[in-house]
Length: 92
Image (cartoon, rainbow, N blue to C red; front, side, top):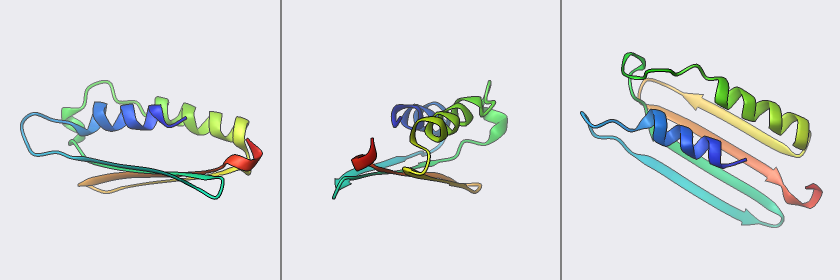
């Protein structure tokens, strides 16, 4: 479940013509897995083939497989894209 978010950060957050960055933190405490991922944003005009379908599919899978066992928060602005995913491992 984590890999698509990480792939997305590299695919759409990396550029060669300006500084860019990716921050990833994964922790597991008391049967709770938490991933915090943030990356710089590439202007949409620079991104080819970006439809958002991949992340929507991950959201659907999370809902189908882990309903009421996870929280997903996605936030973005002109400079930063952030994802926070928490999963309760006791019920998985």
